[in-house]
Length: 157
Image (cartoon, rainbow, N blue to C red; front, side):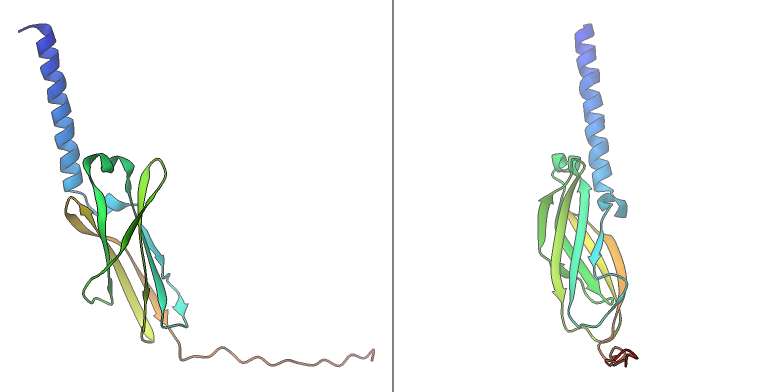
């Protein structure tokens, strides 16, 4: 067999092995697939309102787009209840990542402790993968310590 044909076959074989490896990697991605990703709001704090903004950020390496890998769904579970989907918007990120964001308002929350777990599902269908979780507290019953204006008499009057 001519040397040029052998080199061509070796090169094509190497390309195929590389493509299969990338597809296997993308298809078997774990929670780190979307890292660095997180819930930007709410945070681990106490809120005095029953309406809290939810803001989730999911980042994937920009080169995944070469293999049609995108984030097509972001959902969340509040206090272990069924997942609810949130509209996804895509923003161009840095040279390294594509950032997908989902925003909504959590309304009518009861006083007490709450936990949000956010999930992302990619295209082609993979996931859902846990993006992040956060616990926070709602306390609308307590009132801040009352303050009163104090008049101070000056000895110079």
